[in-house]
Image 1 (spheres, one colour):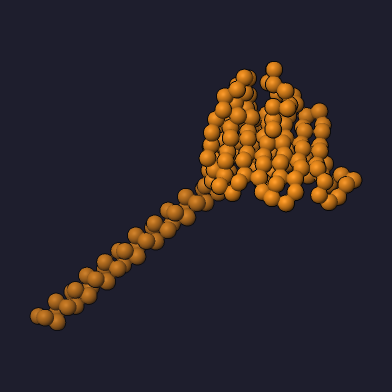
Image 2 (image 1 turned 180 degrees about the horizontal axis):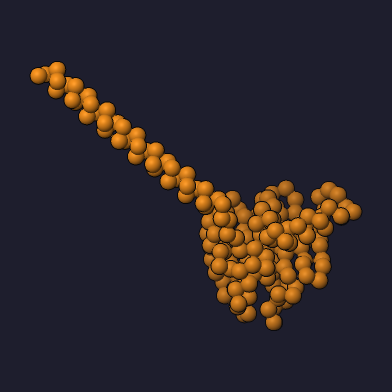
Length: 174
């Protein structure tokens, strides 16, 4: 009888281990599925887009979000522990008409400008006659990009002149 009891105890123990193994595997599968859907759907407030996803920018940058209401626009300030500050300017109808940044490095411009304006930035930067570490200035009727900086001190801004709300000057975006 004693031998039979110890066999049952081992069987019960191996079943517990088996159940625990299944639970761990299911947990890993759920976590992987969540991570995959989070990465597959990158919602961003980008230049020309809407502010519906500004909180996602703050989360992606791992920063603190603060709203500052001003005359004819709202400024969304994202402060990051790395020393970066990103400002996104939105009109009353919720459209992002400008972004600016400051920090020790240049932020992800693809994220801030969006695919359309990032492509314009890349084309204009490639066509520049000056090379090296000079200020970047791109001015077209629909897109303005300015950036300057040196090691650990970069500043820039980009805006869409046609989307500036009435009464708002481009100098507001700083």
